[in-house]
Image (tube, rainbow, N blue to C red):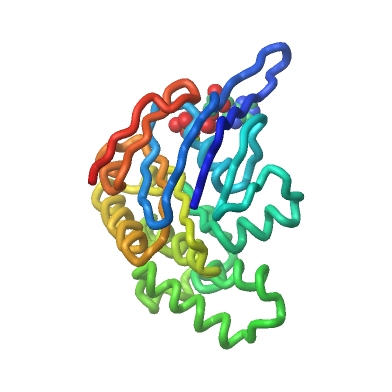
Length: 229
Ligand SMILES: Nc1ncnc2c1ncn2[C@@H]1O[C@H](COP(=O)(O)OP(=O)(O)OP(=O)(O)O)[C@@H](O)[C@H]1O
Ligand SMILES: [Mg+2]
């Protein structure tokens, strides 16, 4: 489902070259749940952004669903992101002036424009809120009228809107208390059990343990991998 072959990512800072990732090789199978851990600056977000086609590697190859993404232009990359990948972030990244429902409708508007009726779109968004286990009575609340956990549920519903096979989450519990964080992880686990491939970046071993495998990054390299089942 996801493959990185000899992936290196460098950033030029004046004279200096920073190696965010060094020659990383990684395969993630369809339906796997992988956690990525490692100290700050070890390259976790860089790796997730490359998997998510938000960023291109300096060297090496990236395959998503057997498609080599290196050679794709921006329009083609946008399409891969839209159809194959759902993103969840630490700070939820919801649009503050839109309701929960409208936030979830947004990716549907981008994908379907006018080929999906308003009624259909609303129905699909409500379905996604339900999958993310947000009570329907919060559908018309704006983000600032929701708790952190509820906002993350809306963000997960939004990630599910176009039914992507892959969900990527960068510190999805980082802004939540541990109890709420655990509920969010249980939800991601449930989505994984329903067939989604999931990659979660976290600092928290208790969060990482929801995965089938933990990848430890250090200085841009895979230091070790641990299989949990
Ligand atoms: N856009 C950028 N420009 C320059 N350097 C960058 C950029 N993005 C990341 N880096 C550098 O690449 C390295 C890896 O960064 P990355 O954000 O992937 O780390 P991380 O493991 O996600 O850290 P954290 O746990 O703090 O989020 C760091 O040294 C960082 O400073
Ligand atoms: Mg990071």
